[in-house]
Image 1 (cartoon, one colour):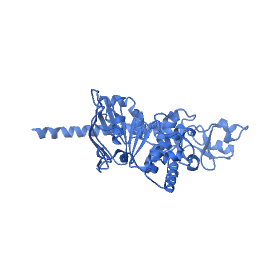
Image 2 (tube, helix red, strand yellow):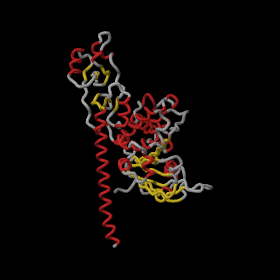
Image 3 (cartoon, helix red, strand yellow):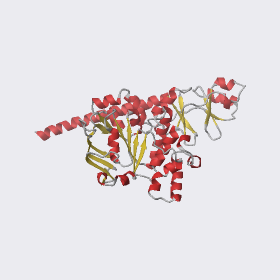
Length: 398
């Protein structure tokens, strides 16, 4: 295994006057390029542990290494310039433009104006905000989701190897939150930063994390593993209770739309003769046809009743597609959208909005069955390893 990007060795934090440590003797390796989630009940020390990595909180004991360097012995200001930081309330400066907010650290480091301007434009495009539109605006002119994207862009300004994220999506409405989570995962696939992410939400941890550290009350690590292994084999009753019921459904956060075979759904182009549309519908086993525009983007669901109407064009009949997802969306998010959709299917589109296929309930059910089989096989394999180890241990002590 390669050396970790971050290593925590016996890291402890005690506050004067408190009976027990806020964080107690944590040993943890955080691999390069992965998202590691700290999750646990309130008061378990997850935010304190994260803030010790960039020394916003100083550890009482132990050592913290970043790229092999003991950060407890370096200048904390220089350390923080190597680590991006995103918080729940975002913390943008309200009197500064979006461009100036992003430029904060580059200016501190003495970058020239041309380099700073180029970096602002690059980062705004990276997080899905058009540079010429947004760089001169102020935070109050942006939505909560847009401000959150700017917060991520600012954290990436000097291309730090590590990012710390403290409940970054916690103050956003659920629909925007799901979308930003998916966009961030798409972004991470490009930038491959090492990210420490704090949340209280186990579902978010399962969705976002390559690895999860579940902290118990008393600020110790109950289990540190991949989401798949935590769901399949919780380390103890505390972990099982914290993960909660419905492990099969939670596993839907481990699978992406891109991982499943998309369902065929009848489609026609705008302007198609209604008689031909009706023929396409009758030749399928579906209850509606999806109309696509000239750029192959979904426009409307139409049923046989809609096709029979003569008072409005087909492009204005029927219903707009409500459930639209991209390939990086999780099956859990997709299922949630499908439950509120008119035709029980989610339309899958690429980054330009062009139609790729659909996901229906049969697709999700098949994925759940496959994941349950995989989980059972993993448990059997783990049980076999334990039974094989027992005779070896016994012979070693005889």
